[in-house]
Amino acid sequence: MASTRKWAATITVSLFTFISPVSSSMIAPALSNIAREFNLNPDSGEVPLAMSVFILGFAVGPLFIGPLSELFGRRIVLQISNMFYFVFNLACGFATNSGQLIA
Image (cartoon, rainbow, N blue to C red):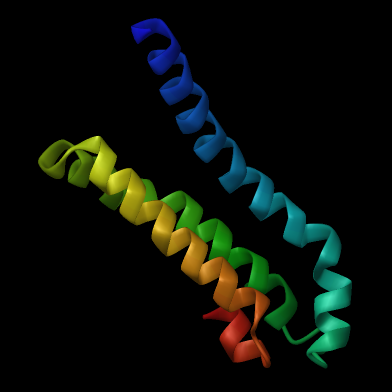
């Protein structure tokens, strides 16, 4: 019973760790469609900025989240981080202009 619970926890955390890089990789092939939908000029720098902001958060986030998990525990920090990830990705899906998408 304990072994099953440990494996379930391991698989769950592994899937959390897997989805972040996958979602950052999914935006790259869609950049031309995003530029077309939001009427962005590819030479303006806004198109790569849409992807770069996500990658920047993906790179800088652990610098702040790592110490927080030592202070408050891994479970609560993981749950709150995943909630922020969900909210920001949901907001990205409902963005109506380039500013909302980049923010």
